[in-house]
Image 1 (cartoon, rainbow, N blue to C red):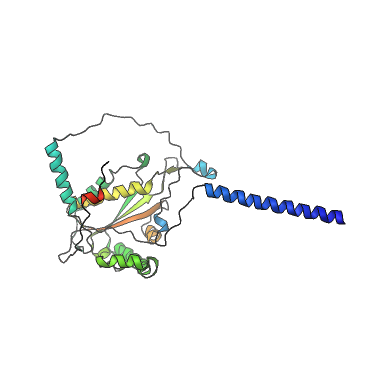
Image 2 (image 1 turned 90 degrees about the vertical axis):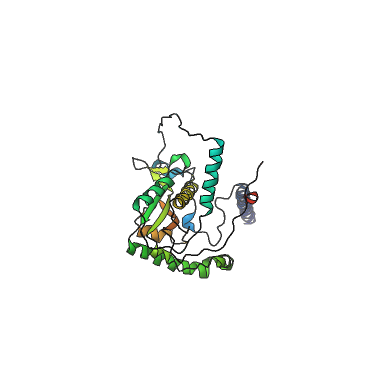
Length: 289
């Protein structure tokens, strides 16, 4: 009996040592490994997170397309300007964009459809990871659909302002005199909703990786803002927090698309005002090495 008890105690001790070593080893490995996902701040919209996966999980490897596409390379066509012309063009372009402002008072006057086509074509010239062009521009003109968009956004934005965003963010926005009421979503003749495609689909139906999809689409949005300014139109850049899934369903977009930015587009209303803000001077935004 004594022998059996001693053996049992020995087994239990060995088992406990093994469990503690395993747990410690796992902890050490986790400490040495990069964190899989940074802790999100409370106001980060889960739907906006970049979900690019460079290494796909083995179990769905068969679902993903391996690119074997061959592309011909052709001579590059380039226009080189004399230095005086370069300086003139760069100065004029800067002055044009320096007049760009976020305008929340937008007229209901209609905008030529060809202009909207052209500014979106301009946005579509943006560079993208592996030339995947992971963007979808949804143009909404229907008044009923615009109003449904406004209802969804205002419902969520009220919660954002009162709960999700926190007092510091709300305080920082006071100088802009903005709140959860978004009248421009009804009055603007055009709403452009820009979706990032977290992955695409090859011709055979397999999933196609879209590398750096959020960065690529963000660059396209920047070009779109410049194109709108160049055309004499105004907008305000909005990122409707926690509205993406509902708006995606409303607009019948597939689940691989996530809403990134919404732009109400049109002419400024006659009573439009903007805050008297100053931009940082060059020496505060540029470092030369």
